Each structure stands twice: as C-alpha cells, then as structure tokens.
Length: 244
Image 1: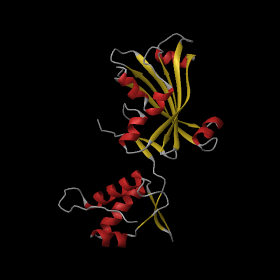
Image 2: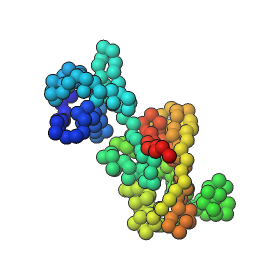
Image 3: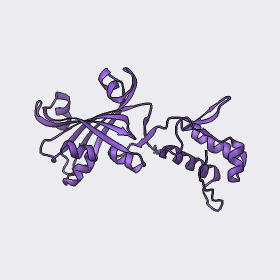
Image 4: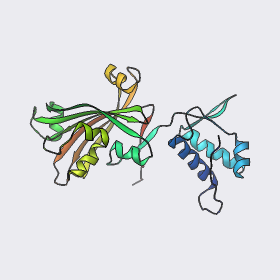
C-alpha cells in the first residue's frame, strides 16, 4: 500500500480520525480494493509520524465499520465495502454519484400495466387503473446492486429506455417539472427469488434489503410507488437518531 495521506497536526480534527477517514475514502473510491493488505501499525506509525495507539484506534474504527478485517498470520485486509445510503428523500442514482461511485442502469421493463390492488391502494387510484411500470437493474461499478420497480401515473413525465439508462428517474422527473416533496418509506428484508438471484448475481434465498416508498408532489398527489430490492452483502441503509 502506497497512499498519499496527509495528517494535519494543526487541525482540531483528532489524528486517528484523520487517518481513518482518509483510509475509508481510499476504500470507497477503489484505491484500496478488497483483499489489499494494509500496512502494520508500526509501518503506518512510522510513515505518518503517529503513535501506535493513534494508528490502532484508526484501524479499529474501520474494523468496526466492516471495511477492514484482521486475520491471524495474514494481517489487516480490506473487505468488500458496503455502500451506505442515508435514509433521505433521494434517489439511488444521485446517492451513488454523490459517493463517487459509477452507477449504470439496464431497463428491464417499461410499459403500461393495470395496477395491482396493493399498488392502487397506495397511489389512491382504482384497482386495475393503467399505470406506467418501470423495472430496472442498477449497477455500481459494473456489479449488480439493486432491482428497482416503480409504478407511476402515465401522464407524469415522458420516459424512454434511453433516458432511464442514462440517468436516474428522479432526475428525469425534475427535468419535467415534477418535484417530490414528501414520501412514506418502509425498510424490510426478503430472500432472493430465483429470478432476482440471476439478475443480482447471487444465490437464490440470499438476503436482500427491501425499500417501499410512496412519494407525493407539492399538491399532495401520490405520484410514485416504488419497491426496490438490494443485495444485503454490499448495501446498507444509514440513519441518525436523535433523543427526544
């Protein structure tokens, strides 16, 4: 490992945190890849002029986050980094771009369909109302990450396969003057079906994180029902809790 890290002793940010954050950034950006070995505490301390307890605390931060693992006889190695997504009213595409990842999309389905009863209830439309159904496979750096299924009013915005594969759905809605103001969201889990496993390059029955979202515009009209399934081994939701 030969990283160009900068430790600023004049900064109020603790030294261990500076080191851990820069190592985390290197992992998230791909500069440090899964399987790469990290220098020993002694080597890191000597290279950056830090004490061994400071380096040990920085490494432990990343072990706790699941980004590094210590193996007897091998040393400290990078493991598969999870994509951590804040639970906010944003799109997966926007979040990936913001995190300096490389999102890409394959549209599996784009067609008008009668709304199933559960979807019709969520969008407050009559059962069997015709809606636009969009199903996409989202990749991160060429690796399948999520299957995204969305139901939308047919008159909401002009959507094409080419546009949906070039950018995110929410970006296309914004370009058409549609702005989502509030959403109800549920986080859950499921086991991958055979079809989902094939698409996501995982095993049937593998754990998936699920997200259901009903989104509303400024007038209070329900404009989107989404059901997304994510590979749980590379993806997690993140939220901040505040005491009341």
